Length: 138
Image 1 (tube, rainbow, N blue to C red):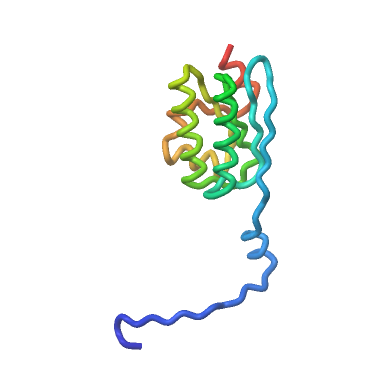
Image 2 (tube, rainbow, N blue to C red):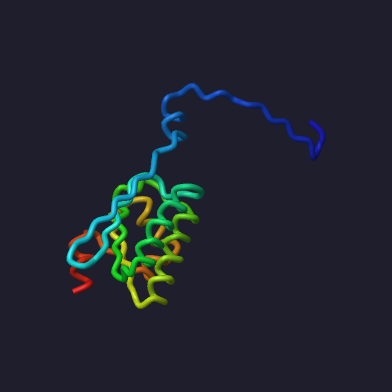
Protein backbone atom coordinates (compact mmCIF):
# COMPACT_ATOMS: atom_id res chain seq x y z
CA UNK A 1 0.00 0.00 0.00
CA UNK A 2 1.46 3.42 -0.96
CA UNK A 3 2.37 5.87 1.78
CA UNK A 4 -0.54 8.05 2.92
CA UNK A 5 -3.28 5.69 1.80
CA UNK A 6 -5.39 3.85 4.27
CA UNK A 7 -8.01 1.23 3.93
CA UNK A 8 -10.74 0.38 6.30
CA UNK A 9 -13.13 -2.47 6.59
CA UNK A 10 -15.96 -3.21 8.91
CA UNK A 11 -15.61 -6.19 11.13
CA UNK A 12 -18.96 -7.38 12.44
CA UNK A 13 -19.05 -8.12 16.12
CA UNK A 14 -21.26 -11.02 17.03
CA UNK A 15 -20.04 -11.51 20.55
CA UNK A 16 -22.52 -10.92 23.34
CA UNK A 17 -19.90 -9.01 25.34
CA UNK A 18 -19.52 -6.25 22.76
CA UNK A 19 -23.26 -5.80 22.38
CA UNK A 20 -23.66 -5.52 26.12
CA UNK A 21 -20.96 -2.85 26.27
CA UNK A 22 -22.61 -0.66 23.66
CA UNK A 23 -26.22 -0.91 24.82
CA UNK A 24 -27.65 2.27 26.29
CA UNK A 25 -28.56 2.00 29.93
CA UNK A 26 -31.45 4.35 30.69
CA UNK A 27 -30.64 7.09 33.17
CA UNK A 28 -32.79 7.26 36.28
CA UNK A 29 -32.77 10.16 38.72
CA UNK A 30 -34.58 9.99 42.05
CA UNK A 31 -34.83 13.02 44.33
CA UNK A 32 -35.57 12.71 48.04
CA UNK A 33 -35.01 14.74 51.16
CA UNK A 34 -33.11 13.77 54.28
CA UNK A 35 -32.76 16.20 57.17
CA UNK A 36 -33.20 19.33 55.04
CA UNK A 37 -30.77 18.08 52.39
CA UNK A 38 -31.87 17.11 48.87
CA UNK A 39 -30.40 13.73 47.96
CA UNK A 40 -30.24 12.82 44.28
CA UNK A 41 -29.76 9.15 43.46
CA UNK A 42 -28.43 8.72 39.92
CA UNK A 43 -28.58 5.35 38.11
CA UNK A 44 -27.06 4.67 34.69
CA UNK A 45 -24.20 6.11 32.68
CA UNK A 46 -23.49 9.81 33.19
CA UNK A 47 -22.19 10.60 29.73
CA UNK A 48 -22.52 13.18 26.95
CA UNK A 49 -25.97 13.91 25.62
CA UNK A 50 -29.25 13.19 27.29
CA UNK A 51 -27.94 11.71 30.58
CA UNK A 52 -25.83 14.78 31.44
CA UNK A 53 -28.63 17.11 30.33
CA UNK A 54 -31.16 15.21 32.47
CA UNK A 55 -29.01 15.55 35.57
CA UNK A 56 -28.30 19.22 34.91
CA UNK A 57 -32.01 19.98 34.46
CA UNK A 58 -32.95 18.07 37.63
CA UNK A 59 -30.31 19.86 39.71
CA UNK A 60 -31.08 23.25 38.16
CA UNK A 61 -34.77 22.89 39.00
CA UNK A 62 -33.86 22.14 42.62
CA UNK A 63 -31.67 25.25 42.78
CA UNK A 64 -34.41 27.34 41.15
CA UNK A 65 -36.79 25.99 43.81
CA UNK A 66 -34.56 27.30 46.60
CA UNK A 67 -32.64 24.15 47.51
CA UNK A 68 -29.15 24.98 48.79
CA UNK A 69 -27.90 21.67 50.26
CA UNK A 70 -27.47 18.90 47.70
CA UNK A 71 -25.94 15.44 47.76
CA UNK A 72 -25.53 13.57 44.47
CA UNK A 73 -25.16 9.82 45.00
CA UNK A 74 -23.03 8.33 42.23
CA UNK A 75 -22.67 4.78 43.57
CA UNK A 76 -24.94 3.35 40.82
CA UNK A 77 -23.04 5.08 37.99
CA UNK A 78 -20.88 2.59 36.06
CA UNK A 79 -19.34 5.28 33.82
CA UNK A 80 -18.84 9.05 33.73
CA UNK A 81 -17.25 11.13 30.98
CA UNK A 82 -16.11 14.74 30.66
CA UNK A 83 -19.68 15.89 30.04
CA UNK A 84 -20.88 14.27 33.26
CA UNK A 85 -17.96 15.76 35.18
CA UNK A 86 -18.70 19.16 33.65
CA UNK A 87 -22.31 18.93 34.81
CA UNK A 88 -21.16 18.34 38.39
CA UNK A 89 -18.71 21.27 38.21
CA UNK A 90 -21.31 23.66 36.77
CA UNK A 91 -23.85 22.77 39.43
CA UNK A 92 -21.25 23.06 42.20
CA UNK A 93 -20.33 26.57 40.99
CA UNK A 94 -23.99 27.57 40.62
CA UNK A 95 -24.79 26.36 44.14
CA UNK A 96 -21.77 28.18 45.59
CA UNK A 97 -22.87 31.43 43.93
CA UNK A 98 -26.33 30.96 45.46
CA UNK A 99 -24.89 30.28 48.91
CA UNK A 100 -25.36 26.53 48.69
CA UNK A 101 -23.15 23.47 48.73
CA UNK A 102 -22.80 20.25 46.75
CA UNK A 103 -21.53 16.98 48.16
CA UNK A 104 -20.90 13.76 46.24
CA UNK A 105 -21.17 10.15 47.36
CA UNK A 106 -18.99 7.77 45.42
CA UNK A 107 -17.37 4.48 46.30
CA UNK A 108 -14.24 3.00 44.74
CA UNK A 109 -14.25 2.32 41.01
CA UNK A 110 -14.21 4.08 37.65
CA UNK A 111 -16.20 7.13 38.72
CA UNK A 112 -14.03 7.69 41.79
CA UNK A 113 -10.94 7.28 39.60
CA UNK A 114 -12.25 9.92 37.17
CA UNK A 115 -12.91 12.33 40.05
CA UNK A 116 -9.41 11.70 41.41
CA UNK A 117 -7.55 12.02 38.09
CA UNK A 118 -9.33 15.30 37.28
CA UNK A 119 -8.78 16.50 40.86
CA UNK A 120 -12.48 17.25 41.22
CA UNK A 121 -12.40 15.16 44.36
CA UNK A 122 -10.46 18.07 45.89
CA UNK A 123 -12.87 20.73 44.60
CA UNK A 124 -16.18 19.02 45.40
CA UNK A 125 -16.27 17.26 48.78
CA UNK A 126 -16.72 13.55 48.09
CA UNK A 127 -17.67 10.89 50.62
CA UNK A 128 -17.77 7.10 50.67
CA UNK A 129 -21.27 6.97 52.15
CA UNK A 130 -24.44 9.01 52.22
CA UNK A 131 -24.38 9.11 56.03
CA UNK A 132 -20.89 10.67 55.97
CA UNK A 133 -22.03 13.29 53.44
CA UNK A 134 -25.12 14.10 55.52
CA UNK A 135 -23.00 14.38 58.68
CA UNK A 136 -20.81 16.92 56.87
CA UNK A 137 -23.78 19.30 56.67
CA UNK A 138 -24.33 19.21 60.44
